Image (cartoon, rainbow, N blue to C red; front, side, top):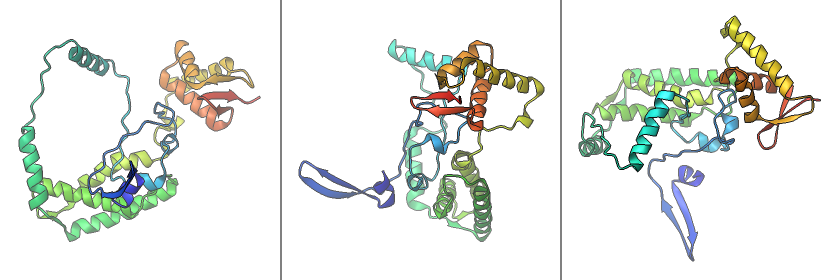
Length: 269
């Protein structure tokens, strides 16, 4: 994928055939976290086994998490069971049929070439400098470079094309910046999910202290325990799952717990 996104080519050497093909197309990729499940209390970059040279080449990077929602889980289960039981599934229709939407998008791509206005260009420059300063202060692992500026410009131009506008104005730039901030900007934020204790009320702080004490009871000094098994053991004692994960993360950052192989944690002797 690195060669495809950097050189726009793919080298093939199979069955005695050696050639190079062009790859001038959009890239939509998906990947799982390094440890199988996403941890809200851990730095996002530490959970991805990708070089920053690859991550910086994506215009937008979204986090898709499996949120435990009973209503959503029920609807998903109902849909899956319906597919395997032969039930007729009602396909919702949008404002436009898919065929007409494809024709409209093809027309926008071929007939519309918007240009960035002076006001929009000034907004882009100011926000790019602001984002660079903010990310430098936070010392994020995903670099914010000129590639991200080009990504924001491409998104702005795409928004203008969808409206068949000849110019990219501030409204398009503002929407592009919003999309960038809720995707790549949110993913690159090293402190996402690390909520300070000042934002907790007294009841939550007390539950967090109880969770830490339970961890010390369940894991003796020098002992090891699976991280997810430990979290489930805390939940069984009546502690909220988010508080359980938060307590384990705090003890890991303080050094009282140390991560070992096979997703286990060990308490210092």
